[in-house]
Amino acid sequence: MKWLYAVLLFFLLVACRTNVTPEQQVKDAQILTEVKAKLAQDLGVGSITNISVNVTNGVVTLSGQVDSADRKARAAAIAKSVPNVARVNDNLQVSGATG
Image (cartoon, rainbow, N blue to C red; front, side, top):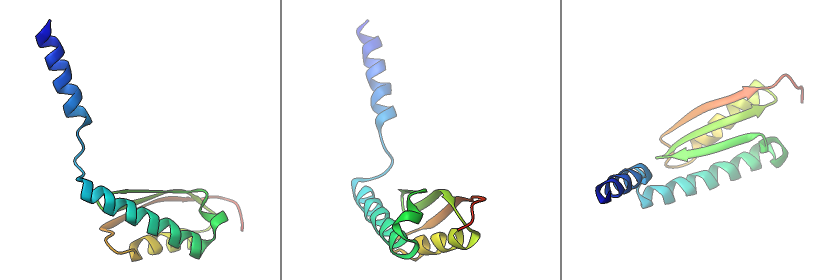
C-alpha cells in the first residue's frame, strides 16, 4: 500500500512541475503589465476590458473581442512593441458592433 502512495505522490509532483523558471515568470509578469498598460493608454481603458492578455515564456496571447479590424491590428502591434516579447498570438475576434 505504501508503494501506491509513493507512486501517486510522484505523479502529483511531476504533474505540478512547471517548465517556466522563476526568472521567466517575473519577465512574463513584467511583459503582461507593460502590454496591458500600453493597450489601456493607446486603445482606452473601456476598449481593453474585452481583451485578455496571457504571457508564457515571452509569448503574448491576445484573445477576446474588439470592435474593428484596425483595433485588432493596433493591439497586436502594441504587444509586439513591448521589449522581451518573443511572439504575439493574435486570437482577437472582430465583433459586429460599430464603434
